[in-house]
Amino acid sequence: MTLLASGFWPLASGFWPLAHALQGAVPSDTFFTEPPHFRWLIILYFFVGGISGGALLVASLLRLFGAPEDRAFIRLGVYISFVGMVLSAVLLIIDLGVPLRFWHMLIQDNTGRPMFKWWSPMSVGAWGLLVFGIFCGMATLRVLRDDRRLTWSTLEFLHHAPVSNFAAIGGIVGGLFLAGYTGVLLAVTNRPIWADSSWLGLLFLLSGISTSVATLFLVAHWQGLIVPTTEARLQRFDRIALILELVVLVVFVVSLGAVAQAFLNAWGLLLLLGVVGVGILKPLSMGRDAGHNVATASVLVLFGGFVLRVVVLLSSEDVHVAGAQVFR
Amino acid sequence: MGARALPILGETRAVLAQSPTVVAEPMGFFTDTTVCIGCKACEVACKEWNQLPARGDGGAHLEMSGLSYDNTVRLDGTTWRHVKFIEQFPEPYNGRWLMMSDVCKHCVQAPCLEVCPTGAIIRTEFDTVVIQSDTCNGCRDCIAACPFGVIDINHVSGTAQKCTLCYDRTSVGLEPACSKACPTDSIQFGPIAELQQRAQRRVEQLQAQGESKAQLYGADRNGPLGGLNAFFLLVDEPEAYGLPRDPKLPTRNLVKSSMLSTLGAVVMTAIGALTLRARRMVAVRKETVQ
Image 1 (cartoon, rainbow over the protein chains, first blue to last red):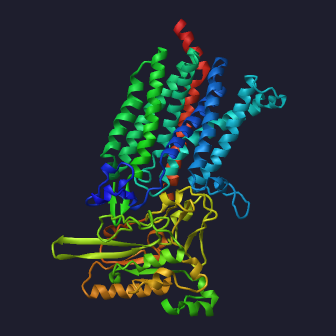
Image 2: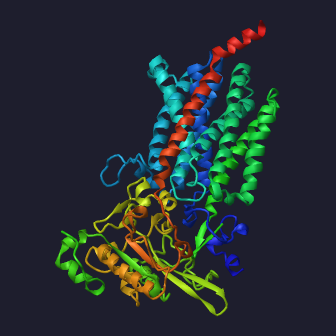
Image 3: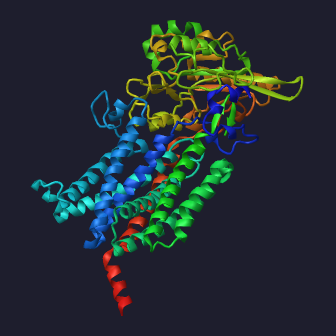
């Protein structure tokens, strides 16, 4: 009582009404660690970064394999990706303890040499975001040129086939990386749930794709953009991504083994109802012929994608050690 | 320079000053929890020497944890020593307290150093692990990587911080503040090889006295993380002290997780190319018309 009433940090944080000492054997050595405070800014980054990566992936695939009528959705995808990329960088920087030192991720502050560790997902992610930004920037410049918002003749080279194909392939690789590396980053820790499975990267990748298509549909609906042939193909792609996401989500929970008991609380309920029920099954069951259904289904997918990240991050954040006891 | 038996504690300074090359030897802590009396002198000495602020409002309002006599509760960015109090009372009037002064383990294969994306975490000439506060940008990756929950953000500097094994003292031949202050020599500082021999003798002594669970935690150089430069003598299982039995490097998941994601990326690219390509739709439309 004293502990909770006093606002003492470890137990009063997060979902404090659920915090209690684990009785008996702790399911994994990861439970003896402390949370890194990856909270709302990081959750938002994971969500927005997934959308940004997925949107550039879809736009690039449409550019390489699509038809002329796909141009409107390509534009939309690139713009969504660009806004998401800028927002991602801002979120990452302001989340740092010392934001002005963000460049230490890329440059060694004492030697001026590049700072890169291929075995550290955060280091690779910093460089990946930079490379993604270059391809996203190329795609955005091209779209701005197509829209005649930029008239610089020097941008004409972006339309040449080799450059255009290179940018599109880079967009695919960069988009897939940005959507998926965040899950790998969590797996390469020692925290409960995150480090107890290797499936988070793939799960976030698929969720990034489904949420990015949902964003595309939602913005298109909002702008009154209707291109039936493009939408039909996107819906098919989205449907497959959602089904695979559901399968991988189940595999992820099963792969946790005894650690899955960390979901025997409100987080587990949220995962089941918010992600599986509202975010995946309901949109899959909805027909999307009418515009209204498309918008509703898209909102549900976005909700599910966001809740997925909330549950994965905060359910682990809630586990901590106080004294010599593990609480969750 | 081969390993040589060194007198430690009070004599460390004189010996190190005589021969600077001895500092190339791994140095660390051996904590004998059986002689810890829970006085918290180590916590105070650490705070004093490293000028670490008190938690909360500086003690104006005492925060009681309710966890035995432990109101420090955990290691963090401003608490680099933490005396744990473990109450083992299976029945009234028959039980014991286990006390253990916890600290950064200065792992031989350090997970925090491994993942640090800025290069702020370095290994010193003493084989200890130090966070350079002027390079760290507070990304917190090291906090999630540490298998012992040692590191946290110091909210004064905004950077991740932990025990430096008093690098500023050891580099001039002084003993770390905590071991210097320990009144029972529960915390002993010195060359790892010397400490290991001493620890092994103590375990054998305790086992001969009937303390069958007496064991060393982290002393084995062939064990988890290549051994710990701050190792412990325990008289119960590691979990009873809030320690992981088999601490691991975070990169154990890197290959599998990356491979699964890459495989998924390839599959989704192929599915995307097949489902989004326009010609297939044209063919489908033609079939429908026919």
